[in-house]
Image (tube, rainbow, N blue to C red):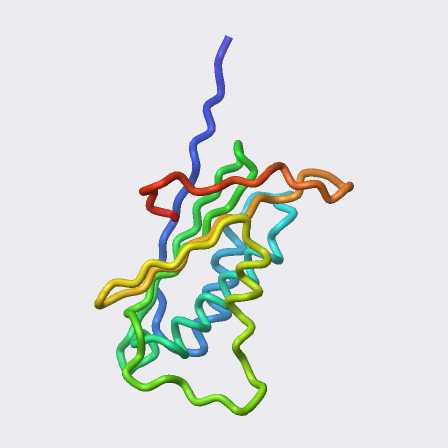
Length: 153
């Protein structure tokens, strides 16, 4: 009798620090998700928000800047890890009109089962994990935290 072992699949990609890359990052991440991932729209939204922050609020948005996104699909656990690494704080904060913005990371925290930010002098890593819904009843497969010291958290 053969035993099937399912290991998490992790894929990373680097993107130009341009507004045009945000949709590209979102579409790339969505294409990595398995059929039936009930959180596909939430994962796409999280990637979009993290990429937007990288472009608008980090040095990644400067000329020649880049950011990377890592997606870890763990079908056995029913979860998706999303990590975005940018080039750290921008020298000049992005200008905002009154009442505009400021809700993206709160939305990410609401959608994710786990959320963590690590700031280094030359980079910032934001990672989260989302469990996906397993049935029509909308119940999640469970809350899946990231193991300490893992690459995705």
